Amino acid sequence: VEITERCQQVFEMELADIPDLGLTIMVAKTVLSYRLSSTSVLEDDDYYLVAPLILVLAKSYADIPRVVEALHVLLKLPRPRIAARGTQDRAAVRSKASHADSLAKMLAANDPELCSHLLNVCGPSKSTRAGGSENDVEDDDDDLDMALSGDPGSMAAVGRLGVLELCRPLIERCFVGTLNTDTCLFAWDQCVLVGFDRLVLPITVCVFVLLREQCLLKPTKAGLSQVLERQAKGILASALSRELESRFFGPHSARVQGPLAEYFPLQNRPSSDLRCHDAPSGGSSAGRTESTRFGAQRGIRSRRDGSRFPRTIID
Image 1 (cartoon, rainbow, N blue to C red):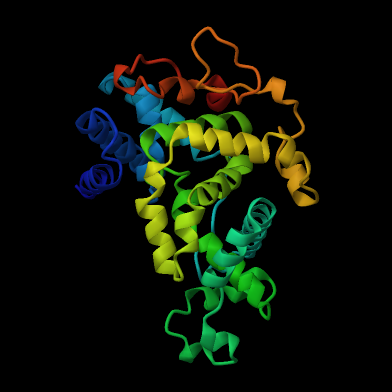
Image 2 (cartoon, rainbow, N blue to C red):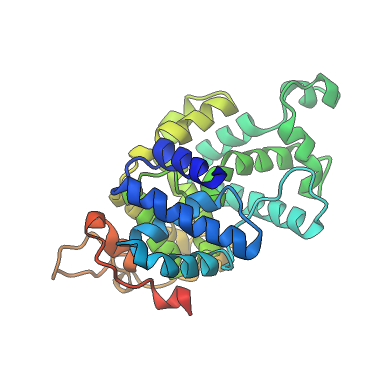
């Protein structure tokens, strides 16, 4: 019952643009119930992560085993995870600090003004900067996370962790529920090709860049959260494709040095090696990003032709 109610809540309130919503909810309930019974583990993010798999794989209830298999494999793939506050797992703590640093560096490399604004808004509260105690801070979530950075005295680390926390829904759910369905499928398309662990943070940067004007007008973390919750669904797949290609798959990304240079395996590929889903049928695809089954599903989702999940993932 709890799984059914949560599925209805997530899909009807946050994924309402999905076609065949009733069928999708019932398939999701069955898939997640099976996962819980077989693994005894079911995270809230799983309610979101299963949605693109259902869109791509399930044209009827008979396809449920394929979705179960794909979800099992997906959850084993490396992807950015953000440690919960108060965790005692030091490896998870170090990973969180690393993701926070990487995200901040990417933002700074692509939009220094926006990066500075996000770090200031998400950084330590005024009373903490002035030397006050944690008891003087009304909203001290990020201040309490200073220890997670590995540098408890660094106020800059608090800002980086604050930006990462702001992005938690995007990152942990791989954009499901934040971007509209068409754009989300494009994002998954690219993540399947390149790797969720390599591309989730760059796509997050592109989302911020596309929402930069709205973000710059918000002086609070609550305001920034509202931008992501309310405005990100208006981002078109074509716009995200352009930003991703120009900033991380094109000449611009080749200028990025240091850790970022190792983060993008495609950044040094010539643009003629890249293809885009939006190329006209039968036309040239040179100079664009590549596509998988998720890309093919965009624009024809209601057909549900039952094509198989990419073998690169199942294998």
